[in-house]
Length: 459
Image (cartoon, rainbow, N blue to C red; front, side, top):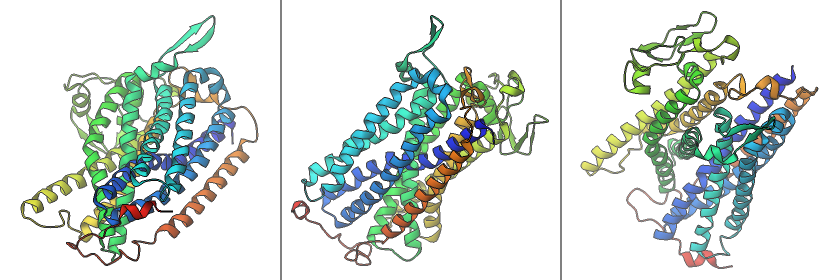
């Protein structure tokens, strides 16, 4: 195994593992803000029970994410030394800001977890705000760094040396389109995971109010954000068409530059013959989407040499996976809203029926959101190849030339497999369902039990 291949495999594995925790690090604090706020407002014991359970899960995910993120911080310097030496000045500020945000999040996470009976309920709820904000910023600073690799703005040369304006990324359309797209994706993955867990519990017969509220929080989070994500995805594609036209060509498998370019759904791109096999072409579709006119010119793969072209088949498949899963969630969202509206007009409850169809649909939103998110990251990274910094530095030039990286890959994989096993064991132990005093004791329409807030602040 070459050093470049080893560096690629280890980085890809590490990033894929870590990002699953990063999205929940962004989403869960915002969900907790809502559920604990509902408890403060209503005194409802069910909201309290959900918040306590999700706080424990958030703590576990935070700990695993901190470990995997620490490994990644070392990998950048060890596996990609030339990249960091050359362009560290451009992204170093973002990594520094990310570290400050992480430390702030960790400090308030401790206050939150150990402050249930030591702080007033409102003060305890307020500690969630810095957790949510700093956790979001921590992830978004890293996404800004990635967007700079896709669109390296603010670069110059002074006295023969490369200079960089670290603040330029905050003024680029690439940065903001990628950051907002990722933020909403994180919230959707969180909502989908929460909905899936409680829908699965309801399929197994746990139809108490605890599971119904958990399902509703997750389901409406992911369904409510789906239209927003569709809009942001469209914006991101337009930005890519101007900053990385070759990536867009790979996403849509456009072999030749021209107008009246169709939008092809599905299919496989043969990189040897430069032709699509299968797929459903929509005449003029891509030109219309990008420029609202069939005469819009779209850059094709013929605009670059074979050496500068990404693996189109992989990028196109990842893009179709992202769009396909996103469209599935959008369809579920549309059906849910229509069902909710019709049952509301008829005075029926619950607004979304808890039939097997809807419970399986809720479960589907979880993996669909995660697959769409991972597919989007494959498009982002795979579509930039063979560059590590688009148009400026090749991956082969950035990787470490040291030997023995194969052992590093093996060690990293074993570490992450161990972390995954530990996580599954802990989450399984936490998956106890509703507290005994709530389980099965609240049929639909029954008044909710109350937890007096004063009791929660006694030592």
